[in-house]
Length: 245
Image (cartoon, rainbow, N blue to C red; front, side, top):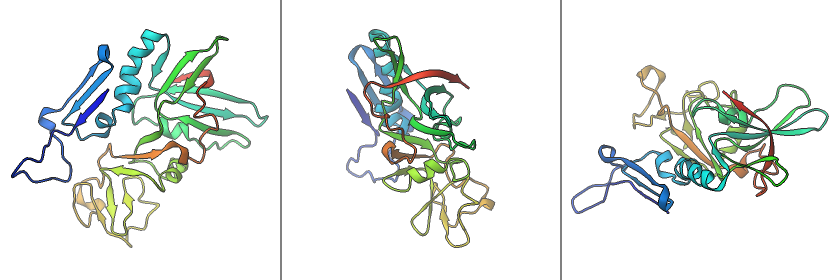
């Protein structure tokens, strides 16, 4: 059971705001004994998308311990070599450290291919034959926007072209979005930029970033051009190696 409240009720005489939240009384609580999560006051996606870290990782770790499996902060990807041999690996990095970029890597080595199963959380168990298998419990990507570009992650840029929610990024006058890292890929002389704080006609000379450093995109996994064919296989994919970085 998951409950989230922004903690900003519109009572009589209280006006609405663009970003309702209650930062002075933010509480994120987990009750493993009841499989329950209660989130109050937070306007941050990681604390309001309760199926993500709160359930899939934190309560998931408790359920995994009880039932004999693992819930890990890991990406899952498949690598195919020029001979057609495919292996899957899991990899653990801290947040905002490159998991999404690695999960969607475009290999520079001829003949190699990388396909993405998931970029953040892995549920793993040993099957009846003793093979470690992993699934991605999520249905989408909740990625950090700043630094994401066609130069760093072209697959992510293709994924977020449609059906995507952006939070705390800058907005362009033609209805698009902008963040740090896109300077060489957008002609800012043709559009004006409104920063995430509402500053109109933003420029780099303003002294403040256009977007929050932890601004995000939220987009369906199925839109990723390199999504692995087995990404929704309930049996999971066989893990041959685990990378820690």
